Length: 562
Image (tube, rainbow, N blue to C red; front, side):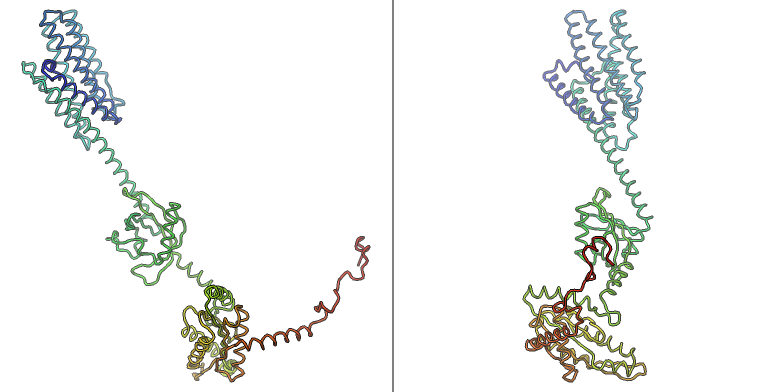
């Protein structure tokens, strides 16, 4: 490849050394890939030996022109060309092998050994000028031929641009070396140009290897994704994979398609967030995932395009890599029936089974909370106590089944006539109680009277198709009287009693004046009850009674008391 004219041309040596340096840098960069380290290292070594051999050839020509002995120069020149051939052939064998490991260089070293013997034989023992001149051409010719074969072996790679370029350069150099047999010599700049092109081919080889690795990674990822898809499709649970960035659905199995009402042909048109009936529920799920990267058994309320009624699902979700993107893997389990049972049990605990109104326990607990909120906000509130008039007469006349109808219709009318934030409860028997937040006694009276009139318009029919009408009496108490639930109910009940005494089908309000009478009556009742107590409970007038009375302390100590 070398041409000793580079040492005679002005600037030729500098250009050649510069391009050789570029070649070495490119080779070092490319050799960082394990697969290229061995062949490129051998090639770089071969190029250095070839350059040195060309330099020694120039020294030999100069010595010959000066009439000095040239045998030593020629021998070193041929040995350098032989070394270049050996290393270039070794590089070719590394290219031929799939991996540098396991490649056999034995034939190369045998050929090199024979070449070394020939060099010594025909330069020292039996000098032969013609054979020497031919060996100067045979060594690089053999090296380039072998290298071209090695590079051609890599054409089967998916990406082989670098090998193709290096092959083309090697073929051209082989032809140029062959022309030297016919005394046709290439210009000096062929050498630096070949260095530049080989350096470029080395970098392309590295790029080809990286592209092959990328292809293999893509194939592995595609295989991994196919395995995920197979697992998802065969899963008995609905599973959805959605892109974490824009929340678009990437993959959904058949069970998920049916459950969510998704059109499988246009999956990417759907966003997972659109199926959440409660935005706060979704936000909490995403916060958990962000903190823990994985969430198990999280309850979500889902709505779908094919169903008007939201339903509950139990989801387990975690973040995965899918097609070079972060995705959310979500598996679902329908727990609607379980949630319905929970709601049913909860309603049974707080609802009256006949009227479906809240029961007394729930009313008292919830009103305590409402009173605290009202006091903090400085707002009024009122309590109504309702009782069906002559309810016993309805039961006796038309039967208990008709009596139940009366209670059911009364409850329904009360719920319909009042606000959503009002609390209506069945307090016991035919008595109902209502809590009215943000309503004072004057407003409560108006509400109660409208409610009384609405109930009076109700008509039901007995089993024998007789028309049955009924009325209610209502007592009102408010925050002007007390902030205690029990007191409010008792005072509203007192006002209800007053309405009953006043002729029924009317509303009475418990006032502060009524409160004075109520307290005095309560005090008198307490005294009357105290008088009727058995002496054993009257601790103020009766001495303590002990089971040990009459037993001596000594007997207790000895254990002989009876």
